[in-house]
Image 1 (cartoon, rainbow, N blue to C red):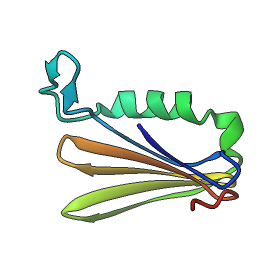
Image 2 (cartoon, rainbow, N blue to C red; image 1 turned 30 degrees about the vertical axis):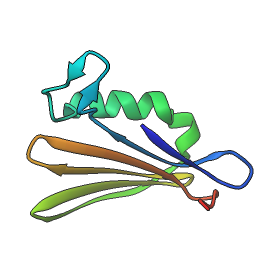
Image 3 (cartoon, helix red, strand yellow; image 1 turned 90 degrees about the horizontal axis):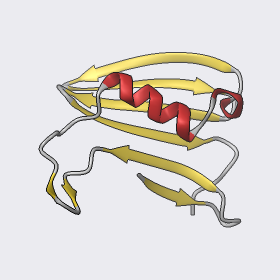
Length: 96
């Protein structure tokens, strides 16, 4: 996970992807399983912190991005085949 912080030190954005190199060598798995993605999201930004669900949408042009809009955050899952990247962005916090 790679976090970004606002000027007050609060997390304003997180990006989660599968590690390709680990302390014991190389991780040969190149993806985050879809079920694991939602479990990770629940751990990082619980439903109570997300706010009201506003909408969801998907765009695909070779790479697909599914976005879930809530009143407090937008959660995006970018995927290409088995590769997945999770991005969480808070609406009321400005990244510097």
